[in-house]
Image (cartoon, rainbow, N blue to C red; front, side, top):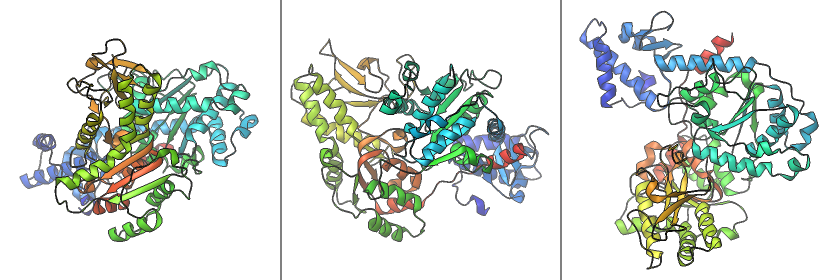
Length: 585
């Protein structure tokens, strides 16, 4: 059972109940054997809860499952499948098998020819040019790279060239979340305005009108989780682009690949070092391990945003390259190679010319609540200009400059944390920032329930009636006609919604979890990692957090938690390569 040591036995009531139920309907030699089977099932679910599709386990440890497990699903249906030393739930085994089959199909498929040679000079970077050539010849292309390596810049040129050389091209763009889709749209619209593309008449009105959407909407996945588009009815597009592909889970990826027609190009973009999906699977990471896909995978390596001599770039590089296992040594190396601890100070973003990191350790022991408040106040520094902007708007709500300034100042800064609750969890951070903002608003401003001018909010579930997606962020303003009411403006959607129409599940959004921030960018990002978050840490979580910043990272961390973040790398267990190899051969 050495392979199981990394997992904590699943204690969820439903897991225990299901394990008991499933074993009661099977035959065991003894009650002890049945209890052993229950133990195996609970460990499998512990692995699944961590995003693994299977559990690495020896044949002798699988034996207690008896007739509940088989090595071939085609023989007879059993709750569990065991192959290549990996134990699966039947569902996850079949999903991996289906996905591998579709990846193999697309990897071998030929597509409509595209002569990209006349346009190679549009891309001066060798790796970006290689991406254009790859997509020109392949039905399946993987384009990966860190922040600032030009994934969207390269994509815009690829799409423009395809659109120019292939008549009547039908293009769809999507991302796993609404926020990521909106970020994709903003970045593409900026990229399509590039002088070189416009000068060569490569940007058509149709390209400008492309609206990235969520994968759920693209596939038309209903309440039961079934897609309207599938093998028998594929998506009606010639090119399908998926951004933030690291967020693809096993189920969603399988439905996506099955909906891609034989003659369709599928382009996956992502950063392999970021967080993987919330649900089971690490599909982008799995695809990168397949030798047969080597020629269809391009890694963009030159970052324009984070130069090697700037601190955020050094921080990101340090996370990826750290190779020690000693907690004290890793912190010493961090202080030597990235930045030394200091006291967090207010930052004037207008004076920042090279990206930077300011770092301070959180105390190991707290003297009193006042000491915690001091650190909360340091995190407030980044919102001081926002408070000034909101106050100016309150005095002149009809001033469009004041309105725009509120939007800009809020977009400049965000606080990220690993936890929902705790001294520095999302709930407490939002509560403190809200108190600070309200204390600075004019005395004439009237709060109504949870609503007040300047309240930033995040949508936490898709609401198709209002046209809002999970992760959408808006800011509360005085109603434009009825000044005693409030309405919320969503900048990325350019849309107003009456505050009282928004669902009760909406959350204040001065701070958000690192997971929720994926796909977003801010000029200045504060990252706070308290002691209670140590068990949640990983290199991917920390990397995702600090690379949300474009200019400044303010980093508050407990010593133990920092060590955990720098030492713990997430590697999800999967049998995808086995499935692909068997299908490929």
